[in-house]
Length: 235
Picture 1 (spheres, rainbow, N blue to C red):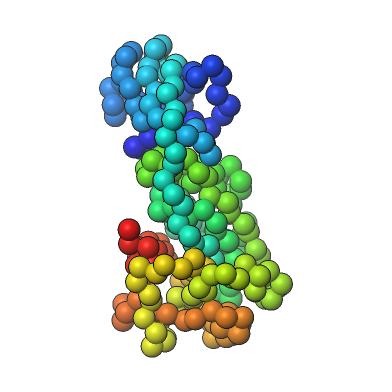
Picture 2 (cartoon, rainbow, N blue to C red):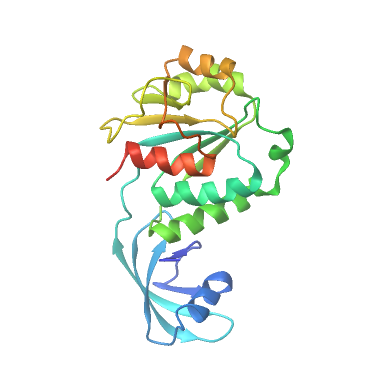
C-alpha cells in the first residue's frame, strides 16, 4: 500500500481510519501521532494525511488534498472472465495500471461456475480495485461491467464501443505484431485461458477488431494483461 484511499465522505478535512488500513499503518509503518502519509479520496484529489489521534481502534487524520490523480489510460479492456483467484489479481493489476473501463465477458472456454463466484459481487470487485489504486497512488475507481452472453454483447454493444478507437484482440495464431507505444485510443480484447475459440475471433474481426500477438510464448491471462498494456502504453 503506497497510499491510503479514503472511501467514505470527508468531514471538515478529517478522516477516521480503521480496519485493514489501520493495521497497515501500525504494523508496517509503525505509525505515531504527527506522522504524515500519502492519501487520496476515492474519485477525488490526493495529498497528505497527518495523524492527530491514534489508538488500537482507529486513527484520525487531518487532510491536505490538492493533487490530481494520474491520467487514465486511453483504453477499454474487454476481458473473458478469468477463474476467481486470477480475477482478484487481475482487477488489482488493471486498477494499478490506469485502466478505467473494464468489461468482463463470457466466452466458450469460461466455465459457467466462474459467474457464480462471490468475487464478482460489487463489494468484492471494489475491494480488489481499491488495493490496486492504493498500490499505484491513484483515486479514480475503474468501472466494471459484467456481460454474460458473448454474441449479444459483440453484436449489440461492442460495435458501438469500439468507435473512435483501435480495436485489437490478443490472439497467438496471427502474423500481426501487437503495436508499441500507440498514440490511439484502444479497445483491447483478451480471451480466457486457452484463448477465444475461432468463432469468437471471427465475430470480433467481423466488427472491426485486428488480431495481434506478443510473440511465440503463450502467457497466462494475469501475465498477458500487463504485458500487452505495457507494450501499448509504455510511458
